Length: 246
Length: 246
DNA sequence: CGGTCATTTGAGCGCACTCAATACTCGTGG
DNA sequence: CCACGAGTATTGAGTGCGCTCAAATGACCG
Image (tube, rainbow over all chains, first blue to last red; front, side, top):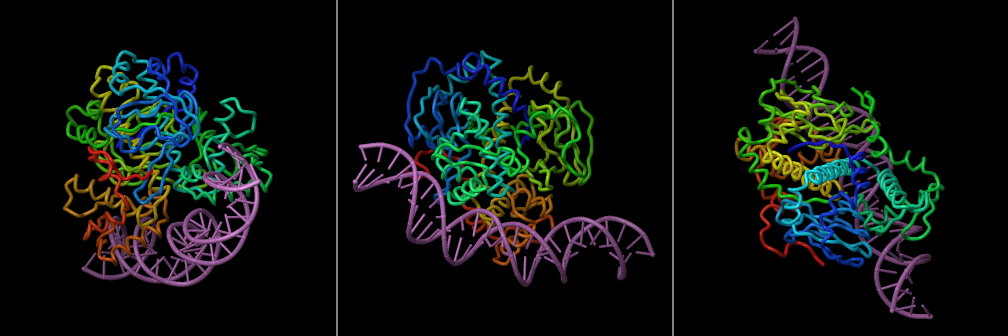
């Protein structure tokens, strides 16, 4: 195994800023636009991994299915994300549309070929891979030792940042996924997710208005209940001596 | 985010086979050998990430510490592993010696510079990164929805494969880590790990002899209790139609 | 307005956790 | 070689968080 440790945020913002001009998405521009509606599956876990996909609008969930029916969602994708980067013969997970999705596809061969001529994009690819490793490790920490409330608060904050970045009203969380999706992402049941949201609303921290949007009333309380918020803690870090004991 | 899906096994075996001749380890060969003993910390979470490390012998644990004292082990490293690959300013985790460890180090700059001249090694690096992403996602599935017994059986099988690959006697699991390390890796408590091992031994599946080695008596039972074993299921897959419903 | 699906709410249970005590391992020194 | 001590592991008792099963309510669409 190779343990890595990558410059997530700065590079991510960089790629976000240059997307459409220099991002990996440019490699898909000659492909025709395809569409999927809520519940449609772009590709299945186990399918031959022939293509990569660039999401242009809408949202996807990335799922892994256990043979007994249990499901884990390992991530949610949205505009400007790329999915299917792979050296493996078959996809290790399914990609399913949460709502109306439009995307472009590209064969693996053509993608790799174009990449050979673009050292700058190779670096972007690497940085996004790194981002993914870091995200996966954060998720491992969350799943390994956090309570239901901590998990949900963490998730809601993450979503709040995404929503604000996408231009939603301040303090409004946009949730394109269902409660069941959230549960499968956080390693909880749908009932526990629901109960926890209700509890937070009862404490005046949230106001769960409609199904797919939640208003945050006390962000500070949310941060506190999330335990140490990964995002805010791992970000700046330019000075030494941090939070560990020994 | 960028969701990836990589050719884990074949590439891994390739890198294992060529290690010492063409692997990433060659980039460390001019460095002097350093040593650490059990409990020593090679680098801390939060330290400036200046170096990469190539493990030459012994075992390490990779830890993340939460500010309230909880700890998660995200992986174990051993001979021929590289740690510290990073575009980030600071390490996101600590690396601690489980036993007597010898390693070589290399600055990030020198590593990257040498890599520029070696497209073959760039590919190895990428493949190992992919391996790590796949491993992390397997772990997410394990942590999100498996019982204590499933987790432990999964872990023991994983360790059994590693032990046999390293030339231990057949069906003997070598465990360089403590029960607490195992617990922090599997998202359990030390008591639950201990109880589960006792239970499996009582059922004649294991024989927990000394502290750091376990004899497997019924491997099939272990596989069955692990649920679907990720390794064996994700491996071959050359034919279509696999285990999902829809 | 009715039907379907998503969500909420309730009651009860069980797995894994916590706290606590005991037993084992292994290294060290008498 | 044995006795001792510190760290590690096992075992026991009891509890609680999140799960399961079940029913009611609410949202959305034709």
